[in-house]
Length: 412
Image 1 (tube, rainbow, N blue to C red):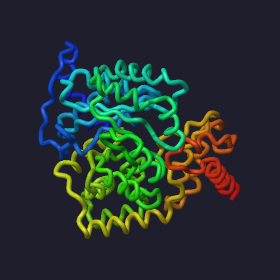
Image 2: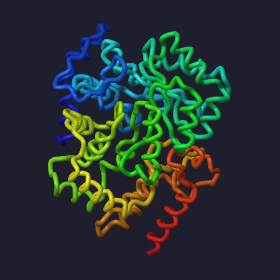
Image 3: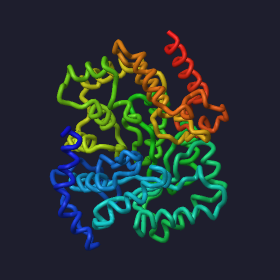
Image 4: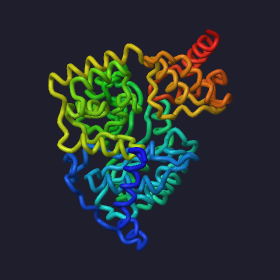
């Protein structure tokens, strides 16, 4: 039995009593033992680690592993994690319902549930209310503690105004169906400022902040805009789509030489812990190991020391030397003809920082493992992916680059 199976089975065993009690449909209050660090927000104590629900555990057929997800939710709650972040389209539309089922057995006041209005999907104004009501049913709740306008870039911001999303959400807040209202942002600091100025009722903002994007994607500027507006910040992509948990060999060696007991991911979280105004950091914990490592990091969470920050800076510099494409695998760029954009970029980045002698063979093998219909040369250059990309990557050009590299390596 490998380590993942051991942890998974342990979670399933220890959670048996609660699972059985859930059959009575009575809610229970999870007992928090040695809880992780928290942030004071209004009348709440919010866990500094948020449970991101975009990458829930899955079975071999791709369906959400409901049993494992429920046990991970239980483990999270008993560790003191009380912020759960889902969205309408996460996991092909299955995340909200899965979280509703996982959380229904617990006392509603013991956790904070967050979801988002998918403005990128709207085609007419009455869909706003329809989707919101559907979300309440999916999540098996009467209200959302935190609610966001989802993925605001220039195009989605125009849709937000066009379909009167904010007035409707303010109405929901007045009716008690939303406690705190915010938005997630995927564009320039200038647009961030415009959105903040447009509506004075925002309670918080969700930003993509991490060590890789701090300069390259103007993360520091966005952070400063939010701080100036005194808006608490929920951090998404603190690990940059797991990239900061899987640095290349040279970068990992630098960190492990300094502290062999610290996970690579823990450095990324602790770097962010030194920033003021952070409400919580979201982590998509697909496997029990991810959850356990994060609980360890966030129990008595401490920022990096000056010396550790220098070490981390050196490690990131070593990683960036070979990082090719800044994709976070969020998959908002879903291709209309089925090109596996995130998968292709992941394979290419792995190839670029692979130091093994057989790196080219491995690259070919992984690329050819994709269905032919999913490969980069099937891109029709329609540009839809580029318009949806939160990182503003020129995806069609990058796909062509990857396929040209594949042909070059294949012919060598």
